[in-house]
Length: 212
Length: 127
Image (cartoon, rainbow over all chains, first blue to last red; front, side, top):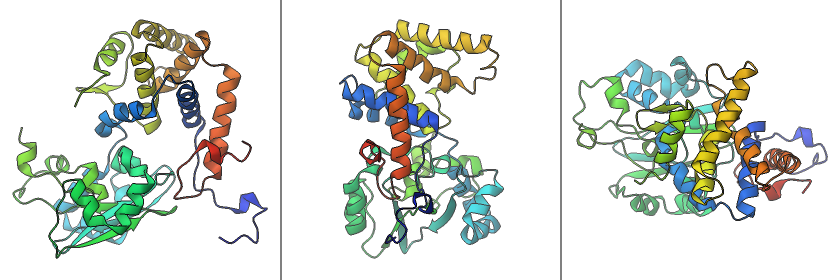
């Protein structure tokens, strides 16, 4: 974007936008932070407690269906936006979703600095660390090391691909289906699909981890 | 994981229909969780008490219901934000104009922030 038209602000595509209520919450928060009544880190801790309680978190159902239904999986590979919409889930800003598939040979991981490009309606709430510039640069330079810090150690032979969200494209990682889940219902499978698995900083949970 | 807000959430649930599941509050959008956390943090800091908050929120919701809104509870967190703003104003910690001005600054900052960069208040071109 080298600026022959940089005086024409409306020619520039706006990547970010706050609704009035989003701006109002930011306003109240920033004013209280400045007055020393709120520590942003304390807010992050509280918000993180609700990781699984924000948004419809449709992604887990999308993954579970892809695991169970080969025809759906094929459509999800072909056109993820349409396949996700099939389940009645559409992005707020009509974002374009792309699915990237983990295989025995390849692991996918998504980075983003969290402007407005995080598809929270699909994935749920973004993790706090996800928006930190150091995470982004380290994930690109040393994805294996970053994954190890999250407790995910992958075989040396497994390739790691790192995807950087753009203003137009958001990625959904389709984790590998855990062994021992043959015959499970989609609902049960969806419980194995965590947010971290769908951004590639984790794997799907094992059946033993959700034993009731 | 510790849930510093569970008691507050339960106290609120007793008085007002906070959207929740079996474990506690749920949020339709991220800003709602942010507004919730802000109230929890301010209360933890002693800026106001749980009782004061319950009264402020209850008053806001009653007013909205009386005015014909808030029937299905879908605007619960809009009322939540108004209650917070009014309570902070009543305590002399904020002003309506101040919040308006800051909100406008955040909207401009968001518009001015390119993809891949965090949205910061410093990005407001009119700052």
